[in-house]
Amino acid sequence: MDKMKQHILNPNKWIDEYADYLFNYTITRVNNHDTAKDLVQETFFAGLRAKDNFQGKASERTWLVSILKRKIIDHYRKINSAKGQAEVKLSFYTDGENEGNWIEERVPQSWDNEAEKSIENDELKDTLEKCIDNLPEKYAMVFRMKTIQQFETEEICKELDITSSNLWVMIHRARTQLRRCMEKNWFKN
Amino acid sequence: MGKFKLSCDEATMICDKSQYGEASFSEKLKLNFHVMFCKICKMYSQQNSKLTDIFKSKCSLNENKQKMSENDKSELSKQFQEMLKNNS
Image (cartoon, rainbow over all chains, first blue to last red):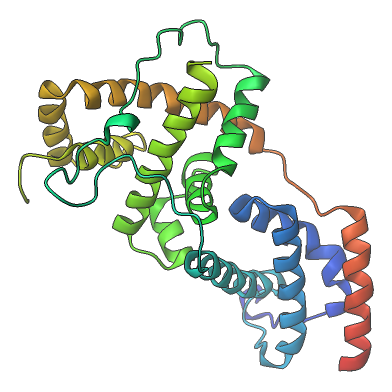
């Protein structure tokens, strides 16, 4: 009767058994070592404080992950609401008679040398990495989850508590800014 | 299903969505119609596939699992032990 097994918590072993797993889980979402480390630490501490609420239905790891997920949403909300945060650089007019049109100086340029620029190239990856890091954090986070980590749309929306149209606006803005950054630093370079 | 004519902002958003295979049929129709007349968005579309290839080439880098550094882990362990003591 394995299904009926009551799980128990053994905090003494948490760090050894779950630190790496939780860290990897976090870093694929926030992509910053210090942030990931902090979130994992907070998760263990919160877990310890809440250990009396553990009902033994889920495994220890699943339970810790559910705490971590809350921490990640909190982090996302924080970066989403932080005052004075850098906004993404828009490529389109957002109001007036030109609403929805390309802003002249942000119109895409043709990449005449793209054929010479091969894809398997470390320099290219560095450039891309820099361009992603230039995005405001929440855009970078959503972009990475969707594009690099290839999460399902539904999963991201659930994890970050956002709507799918919200997600696509962010992906769209991230990609137009990335396109422009890659144009300047790679294709037109 | 809303208006048929898209702004460039809307068209390129659908184009981005379609890079993940998640644009609907009617969205793609509207996008195709838009790029028939809009050279800029047409170019955006073409460059977008190129970008998607570049992004994909980066995915393969992320397959190995990342671990917490030993230093961080022992630091965390120390703090956690401290907390355990006070908690029991």
